[in-house]
Length: 251
Ligand code: BEZ
Image (tube, rainbow, N blue to C red):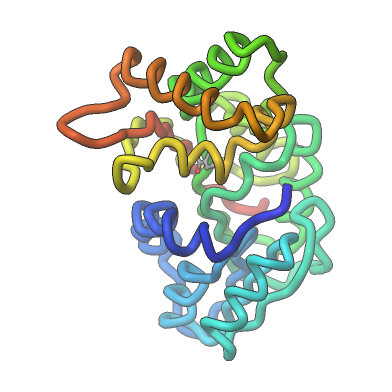
């Protein structure tokens, strides 16, 4: 998937704002080298960099990296795939927010090994990703509306694991899981078009079989179904986010 970094920046700031306290969970110390895996537009990497000069962001998306470099020119931002990080035992800690669920289930072990390999022994990982059931109501509404329009929905691009699944992926990669928690985070979306904007930004893969001239009608159908599923409350759209947070240590 290619990102529209400007749209992400203007309409989806909640992604990093809601997870800012993950930086506290990581607790970067002065002088620590910290790798932010899937740094996106770099806002949380910059928060980490307020605590230590050793923060480095990596992302596979050039548009996101360009945005991060423009906003934080002093922050090292490297293009790399989480499954093949170019680092060997170089970091005291790794951090990741809202990125690891974009790595397909089949590749999750490779990403976990690569992150573990970037850490020194005893180095820690604090990560948050979409967990089991994440945005199930939104995805259900999109899939139903696409079918109703006579198409098969495109592939679901995300891996939203359970605590047990992800803990065992991390353990097999040599990371000892100290904490893992799955929790609901109902997330208000900005404005009357918030749901359409979310689907347009993130749901391209599901909508891919729908021709451009049918998209608006399908999005009307998505809204109708999402309302029926209770995702419009007190005058705003609320996405049914569920987060999986893990803290693990390289053995
Ligand atoms: C998430 O952060 O959970 C998420 C973001 C975009 C698409 C799907 C999930």
